Length: 303
Image (tube, rainbow, N blue to C red; front, side, top):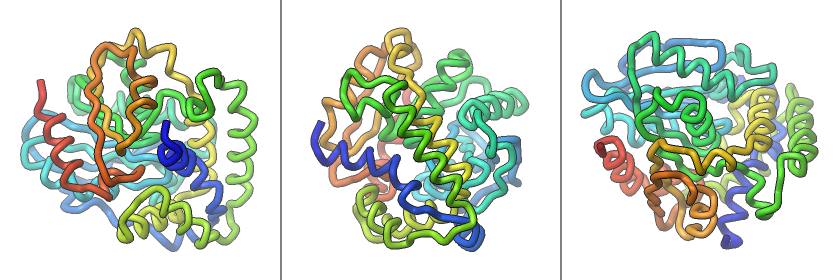
């Protein structure tokens, strides 16, 4: 693993902690809705969903930690020309009410809400795309409901975050740090955000100035109580033992370089297509929108 790869992924987890953002920030800085959304919002216990497009096979887009559905604004409208696109947003992010995400079980709740929504809307087995924490949610969904998903695109995510600390890392090793980070974030609710720290870490998660500005604003718009719990659950979920029996086809998009880490993480899965993207950081879709558009279009069209 290169130092740049490790630093980027550690920053993705540490970002919300360093923000110490509180009520004035997330209440005053709601993220813009996704462009050209064509449906009313469906609100559930843990997520809300809007849709774009009226024809074609369904594709579900799940953003990462503290991110709104607007993270997909650069690719969703084009994808919606040939597919029905379902844009997820986690309750408590983008200035939304936290709903039931103030309790534990946020990630499992997202999986349950997704499956219920898919059943209610008769989506069959759609394609699922997840970025960062959303990628882990995609893996969790495919583990719990393998017959309810046709294929996965994972964008810069790992089946266990502790892999960054070495091949012998375990949940037990990571859990104390994750708990401390969660508790500090929850305790920050109602206190001013540290905009300087947010900007510093945003520079590690995205390369372009406009990308960095979006990442900073999105993280500061999220409820730290939800961010803290979701981050803790992300850090303490280990799906490595499931990779060998994982049959759902995976397309893995990640910033180059980083091949060794991702091949080690996903190499035991039955079918993985690796798509490195040059000149990008964690928010690949913001830094290299055309390369990401090409990747997601190819993924959505593939049999």
